[in-house]
Length: 277
Image 1 (cartoon, helix red, strand yellow):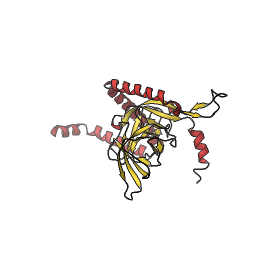
Image 2: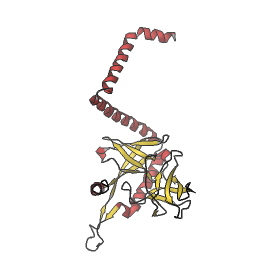
Image 3: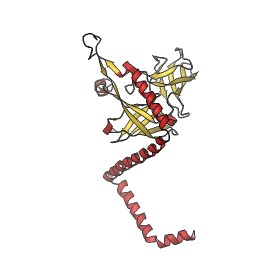
Image 4: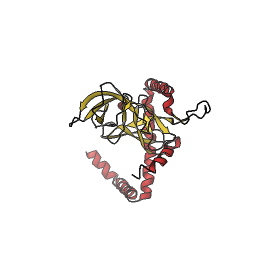
């Protein structure tokens, strides 16, 4: 303690200068919109680079596992087939080359930061608008749905995790659309829940849960998980389902960002009617 006091006494003027300088910088950034924007833009880029280097070190010790995931993902994409295309003609004899067009493309990325401990979780990936990423693009892992893009900088993006209470999907159960609402209750990171599925459907433990064609974030049939628990709501009119996630969100690493090549055209058309209602 005596040494600390002696250090402060000896360097008092320098420490006072640094304190006042810090206060000045804080006030400049806090009350000036331009400097605030510059600060956050710069800090975001710096943080992104730091997180990238951190992830590179981690990846060095798990190369075998990550390479296996990439192999599995390549197999998955090769076998998905027609789900990545939109068919625009039934006359394949007269229009063999134009009978279908690519509907989805994929941008590979790496998760450099991931949070699973909050009610509303997000993860950061090392791809941004310079690589073609935009807001409201779906994100999948080699095993299934992971989240959606909510913010983009030049070389980095932030995605809303499926482990976020604001992330909602209409799922397909056992190959059929049930019009329930899939979301996370904030409890166990291995499970999500489905509400409002009518109890006249025959729902069983083990049935597969996947994406539907109604969500333009993902191709039809991307895995979400499997039903692990079935119970009824308080009024006995609906099923309350628990789903074991296909993606291990605690070990999220290599991912793919999904680009719907027809999204802008679809949004412009639907906005004329849906948003006016």
